[in-house]
Length: 305
Image 1 (cartoon, rainbow, N blue to C red):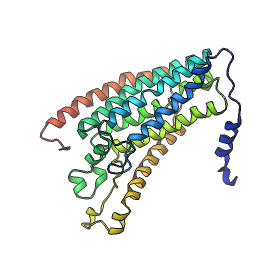
Image 2: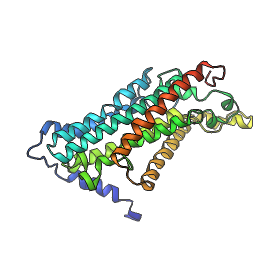
Image 3: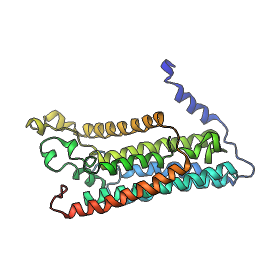
Image 4: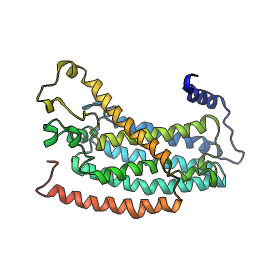
C-alpha cells in the first residue's frame, strides 16, 4: 500500500485467518479464556471515562473505585494464559508478569488515592471539574490549574507505572525474547495471539486517557476566552461537545506518543531493577506524598478549596 499504510491491516487479516493451535497438554477452556480475560477489563473500564460534563457510558459516583477494581483483573488473564499453556516458558513469563503488574499497581493505586484526596470525589466527571477551578482557571490559564502542576512527582510516577503495568518497553521483561521467548503468549497463535497485542494497546490507550482525566484536565481546553476577557463565541458554545472530545483525544494522543518515545529511547531493564524501582522508590515516594498532600489540604495554603 501507499507508504506501507496497509501493512497493519494485512497483519490483522493474516492473524484472523490463521488457525488457533491448541497444545496437546494445554487446559483447553482456560487456554481460550486467557486472552479474553486480558482484553475485557481494558474495554470495560471505558464505561466510566468522561468525554464531557456528565458524558460517560456510566457516570457513576464510584467511578474511580470501579476503575481500580476492574483494571486489577487483567493480571488474572496473564496468569491463566501462562498456567493453561502447560509450558515452562509461558509459566515463567506469567509469574514475571503478575509480580510486575501487582508491584506497579500499588504505586498507581496510591497515585489515584492522592487525586481522590484533592478532588474530594470518586466521580470521574467531578475530578475533571475540580481541575477547572482556582486562580489560574479564572484568568483563562486552565492548563496551570490542572493536577499535573501541584502533583508533578505523582504524575511522573503514574505515567512510568502505567508503562510498567502495560508491560511496555523498557519494562517488557515478560516478553524478553532472549530469555523466555514470548512469555505467557509463547503457545498462542492466530487471533488468540492478536488479542494479547490488542489488549496491550487497549491498556496503553486507557492508561493515557486516565492520565489525561486525572492530571491533564480531561476535556477542558488549556486556554479559554477568559484570558482575552471575552465571552465564549456562540459557534464554539454550540459545538462544545466536539471540543470536549477533541481536547481529551489530543491529550490522550500526547501521552500515547510519550509511551512510544520511551519505547524507542531506553534499553530494557533487568528484572531486579524493575522490582527495585517499584518497591523501593515508587511506593515510598507515593506514601510520602500521600501524607504531604493530606497535610497540604488541611493547611491554610490549600489550593483545592
